[in-house]
Length: 72
Image (tube, rainbow, N blue to C red; front, side, top):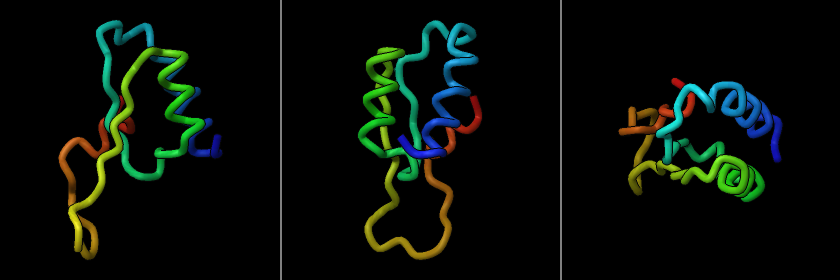
């Protein structure tokens, strides 16, 4: 798992009891590593969905649900 993934995993583990109904986390492409996805699935039983930009997008564009994990 990457440093970014390890940090996110620790943060999620700290707050998971506050969100007992949580079932899905939307993340950007920085969190798409197989180890991170499997760790979330097997530890918390949550679905991790990676939000990808539209084909041909240039520059920064805010995408729906992209920052949900970062706002927890």
